[in-house]
Image (cartoon, rainbow, N blue to C red; front, side, top):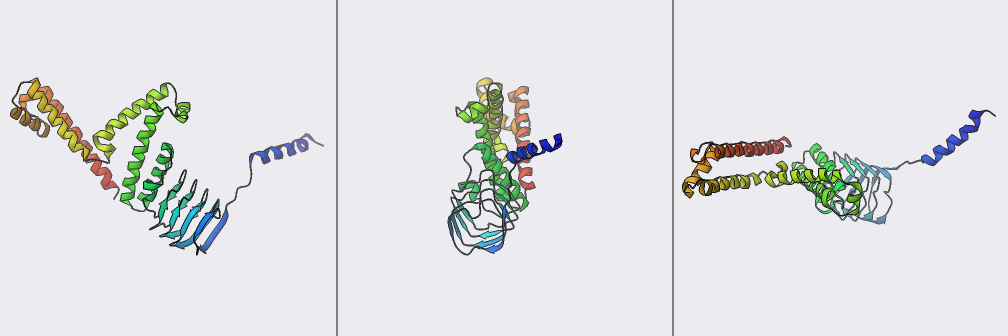
Length: 281
């Protein structure tokens, strides 16, 4: 017996230990005519052109399933498991989700409401980020601007929480994963992200710029009153003039330059926010 013949079974045995067959049984071209409860009938299945209207799915597992070109209009999903599911080209118009698990789930070109973002987010920030990012892309592909805006807000909030916990949280998960200098880096990211969030909501809350502009005007007025000894009326008008027009010589060159810079910065942020929102339509 040759050396090649002796080694061949060993290679086969090693391959058998590493791989195992994983095929999803296909469920296609059927209509669901009854309500389902506590069922694994769709676990690791490939659903294609499955049709259901007004049905209730309670504690049904869609885990690791592929849902393609399906129609679940006005259906109700209660405590269902969509972990690792991939949904594409499907219609969930009017469907309601309550307490479902969408960890690692992805969506593509599917009509689906905002229930996932309001009542069914995963517990961990990184999973919230991934789900919101997938839904944002999905809503954009079907022209749902409200869904895109809602998904972005969830993604921004999850990102801020992730930076905060990576830098300061005492949870074992974060302390094992982020240590030493990496925590300092995340602390810097958190500070920068937090400041942008407070100033203008990272482009999603442009109305906050009104309060920023009001605060800049009040600071200019305070500088004119207590720093330069101007009367309140003159300091107030000079601050407003410098902020709006770039004038207000009573405040001095440095104050006028600062207020003018703030004016252009706030105006630029406002225009950038408008462009971002209009680009989604």
